[in-house]
Image (cartoon, rainbow, N blue to C red; front, side, top):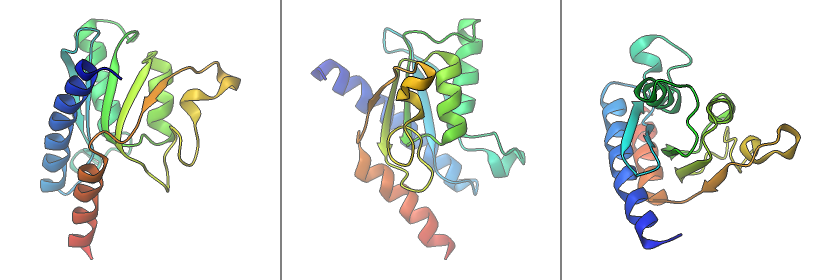
Length: 155
């Protein structure tokens, strides 16, 4: 990964972490996501809103992908990058595949429900012709800390 990519991913992860903290402040699991276009411009953002919207599909990634598609006027997000604070679940990994996003940058691994390399690796499964690049561990400790703090405050 080039330093230009490192800088772009770090800046995007800053935005995703800010969104995750907003989600936590609203009582939702702190996950934030940002979609970058080919130039590195942000074209979609999302934070978990399952509690706020009473919607089981209101995951940060889904909302960010929807906004990016609306921004482009197309469901095809070829050339885009999804930057997310927590490894996507099965539903979100499926949405990555359906939207044709070629790269996922994640912060913390989700050892319970992750679907981009930990529990499952849906986005790189040859049976579905998937060839998504996964860049893991970008600000991983910080992303994990936000989640840990949220759940510890609930105990």
